[in-house]
Length: 132
Length: 132
DNA sequence: CAGCATCCGACACGATACTG
DNA sequence: CAGTATCGTGTCGGATGCTG
Image 1 (cartoon, chains in turn purple, yellow, blue, brown):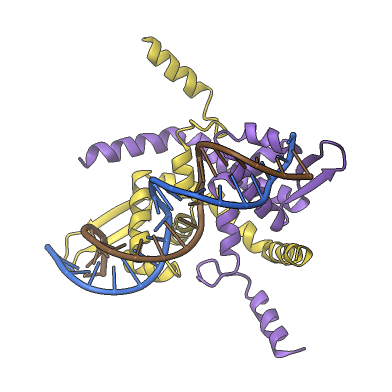
Image 2 (tube, rainbow over the protein chains, first blue to last red):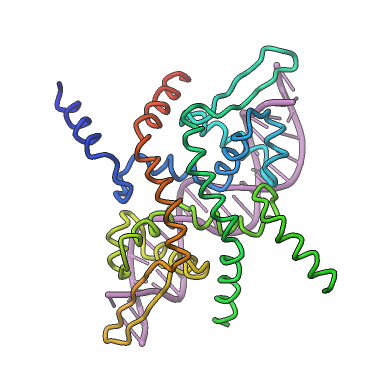
């Protein structure tokens, strides 16, 4: 075992410290919890989607952001991109097993926002009126 | 009951549709699940913190971002800002009841990333080597 | 249909300096 | 100690137009 490998093993045993700014997971977390990625993953929980389906389902997203986020999610191994060799080509996006396992905690979080939306909005309103 | 109020009630009964781009919760969700806010909330789960404590705890955050995020979290009613009238003044940040209830799903999500960090990183590595 | 390329404005963010 | 003010850069993200 080389010194490099030993270091890698030791680091892995320490698990990941998200509070450390050198944590390699941070870019992935940022991307995956970003505005659009959360919605895309939530949408895919219902089943496989085509590009256009996602575009209409996720309200307000641009093609650019959709394609960009799908690429990032595929890179992280959360979404599978399947191309059917038809004409015109049909591309289907599906959650991988890893993606499905992420969808659990993620939809729980989104559900929380739905359940406490009123409290959040009234709190904001109160705050804004309190400080003119 | 006016027509406006009826509409408001109906809308509320439908709950919030996060997929609708007019969903008023979106800005709050974006802010709260943002890079720094997630870490700040996670840090505050351990108990009240002073400004400087948070600054050292959340690695890599600048004073500006910390103050900005704390203000947004206070606005959403997730964090309480308490000032002790001493000299120099001591400011303490604490999760509100609402904040604590959010911390549950949120830390679950972060924990998921910690547990599946290896899979995410190897998936990225594979993806990058596959497409030169 | 499923995108990529390009331009461009708007913030997000960090670094630095300053205040009560 | 706990911020605010200012500046500069980088990236986010939308609009538009084009491809196979």
